[in-house]
Image (cartoon, rainbow, N blue to C red; front, side, top):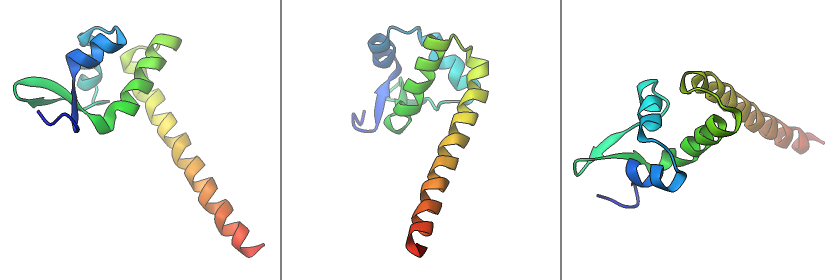
Length: 96
């Protein structure tokens, strides 16, 4: 397994004291991607930031996996809008 690209679900769940079923429920509603590498279920490392955010939302706010889909979508929109505001401010600063 390419250690740099993937983390095993077992290791992630052990490190975060999670049930693996939670990860699979996120996969079922297409919030995360699960791959098989060397016959082990793994998560791409590029998805770790998002997965950890989902775990925090689930634990801290007790949001169900199904509702995480809506929350994740809204957070993505907020992040996109923030990036747009920064870009517009830069453009505006050039004209001032």
